[in-house]
Image 1: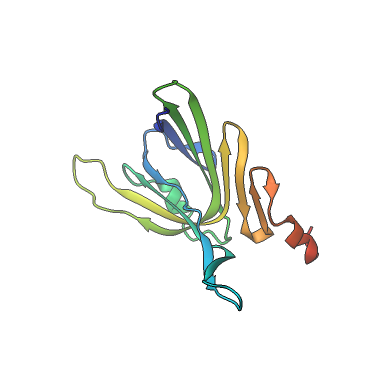
Image 2: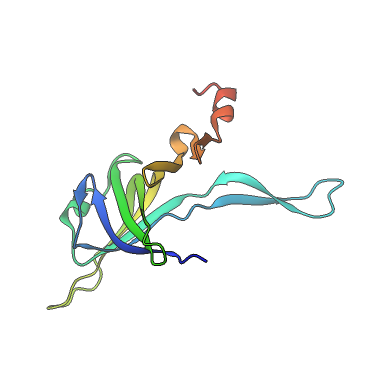
Length: 170
């Protein structure tokens, strides 16, 4: 029997600057495959064919306005903002600690100033359209996705290397 890994603490970074004490929540990108139904001759039913990845998105909320984020609004390049989530997860049955980092590059699609109330922590939220994604578990890269350069590495295997070579991208 094993107990789940529980996020015991985290930090969130913007271009290397730590938002300790400011970042409240981070919603990491959902990895979604674009699937399309297909049924050809000789098939007794439809199967789902992998057509690549769907767009990725990251969102986060803070206890009040963040000037650095506001200054990054409208970044001119698709990967103009670098964010990093670092989480410390612990299992209560073994006390084992895992460090999970998610590194993204992209630009903000939304900045929400939210409700502001005197004497209360404010609301400030961001949504980023992600152009690059990397998940590192205890120092080992588990997943790296770079759609612009046609790179998709999972468990150390570059699943798009043959496709890149086939069309002359090295």
